[in-house]
Amino acid sequence: MRILKRILIFIIIALALYFGVSHFKDQIIKYSVESYLTRSMGAKVEMEKFRMDLISGSMRIAGLKLYNPEGFSPEILLYLPKIEVEFDLTLVPLSHPRLLLRHVDINLDKLLFEKNKEGKSNMDSIKIEFDPKKPIPIDLLNLQIRQVIEKDYRYAKPLVRSYDINLKKSYTNIKNMDQLAFLLMAEPLKQAGIKGAEIFGLTALIGSPAALPVAVALSSMGKGKIQQEVEEPAYALFDLSLKVLDELGDIKKQDKKSYSITASIHGAEVVVRFEPKSENKTVIHVSASKFFLSQHEIASGALYEILEGLSKQTKQ
Image (cartoon, helix red, strand yellow):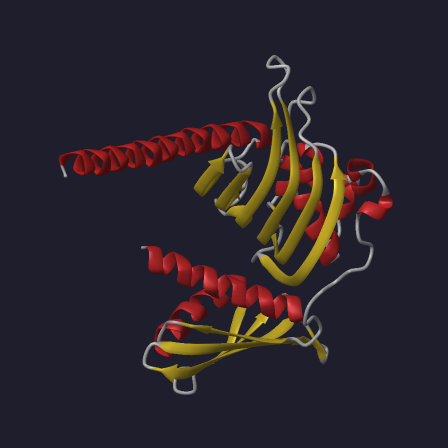
């Protein structure tokens, strides 16, 4: 009986040490990767979670955030909620270890393309400086892109547009991290059709023109009407949205009884309605039109700013 107890105690201690050391190892690597990427990109990089298993050759990253560089709003430029990697690490010879990424899955939730008052873009201010002597090739990349946000501060009031991309695309034979970084930033802009995306020289950076899709794949564009359900009472959303829309344009009409706001934003008429579903649940309806033509990007941009304002308010 004593021997059995000792064995059980030994197993418990061994497991505690294993998981403790594993967690400590992951935290050290996480900090090192954050520091390396921050230096390489010239902007702050954070990760919510990081886990690497050398035995199975796998890596998982949750919540990678690349912030705007200096001289721009303190917002997130690039948000990757999930990165999953399968890799091979060759340690022979030990003096020149070789890392090959066999399979990479990246979920790109949001990319922010911003121009400051001087007309300079945040993309131009990001530097890509990975060590060319240590290329890390990727056999297969599966990239999922959800949304691109465009903000232009050259006007009296910022112009905000949102593009629903909802694209899934696979790429093969990516040669290095420079190509991957440019792909993550330039491809969403190209898909959204944002002017200025050509400055990245996509073909030259990625290689063959066939490596990049040519067709623009936008989802639910041109309808000019969008909606979003949130966990917030209608009266609170009304007050918050009134402030947000005033910062984006000029309030034309407001009616708190019917929970509706009409604003003029960069020549487009934007109508926001709040439909209470319960005491703390509301559906936000946003539509935008200009000269009888729908303005989906303006409507989506207004909704994005309202949701961002709600998120900041919740964190306070």
